[in-house]
Every structure is written in structure tokens, then in C-alpha cells.
Length: 165
Image 1 (cartoon, rainbow, N blue to C red):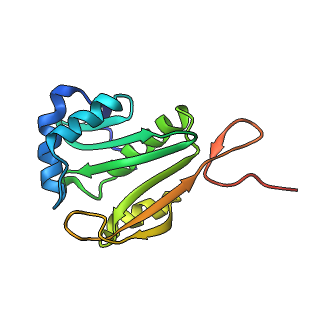
Image 2 (cartoon, rainbow, N blue to C red):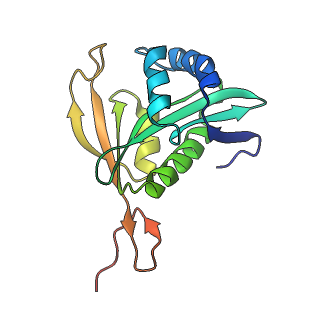
């Protein structure tokens, strides 16, 4: 679902105070400001924000590892605007940026008890790969999920494997 009043763009250093507030609102174990700063420094092309009426209402970060692995580091949407397609918009942009950077496998970790996020990722083709016990500093477990992207004979990318004869 697209929302014409939401715009997505690359994050800027001046956005970090708003991003950090959103981080603290969204997670019981939020990233410190310094980590968000370093993530933006290292991933300026894959750290994005969503704006609504000039305010940052969501953000997402991915990084590209060695080889063909892209990692979704974090995604957060203002609680009052969740379930409106904003997370999907951000994932669309992040996945395209990761493909453009050469990633063919996307991975992420999601809290085991965050069913809405797990369902979002499953609908996007992410499959559970591992249970990570005590992943968060709070002692909560996470689930590692992955999605593989395939290149077709026409050069297009899809999350479906190529058909074999």
C-alpha cells in the first residue's frame, strides 16, 4: 500500500535527534545515539527515513556485507502510524537499494514476540532460519529471517527461484 502523503528519502545527520526519539519510543532496548550516528556514517545510502507533514515518522537501516548479503539492521515506525503500509514502503526502498548494491540474500533479526513484524517479513518472502536465544540485552530471543533474490534470464530480480525445464 502506498501513501502519497508519506515521502521516503536518505537520512541526514540533522535527522538523528528525531530518529533517536523514534528509536526510544519503539524499542525497549533502543540503540544509543552514538550507534545511530555510526550507522549513518557507514551506511549513508541505506539509512532512510519516512516523513509525514515534515516530521520523521519512521526510519530503516540496512548494510551490505561481504559477498551478496544485505542485512536489515533496524526499522521503526511511530506507534500512532503503524499498520498503514509505511514499513512496507521502507522495505521496498531498502530491498531495491540492497539489490542495486549487489545483495542477493537479505537477512534480519526480529524479536520472537513481535508477531506483527514477523508477519510483515513473512509476507515479503522472509523465512525463519534460526532462533537466537538471549539476543537482546533484555534477555529476549530473536528470530533470524532471510530472503533470497534470484536473477531471471531477462535480468530482472525476483524472490522466486528461476523455473527449471
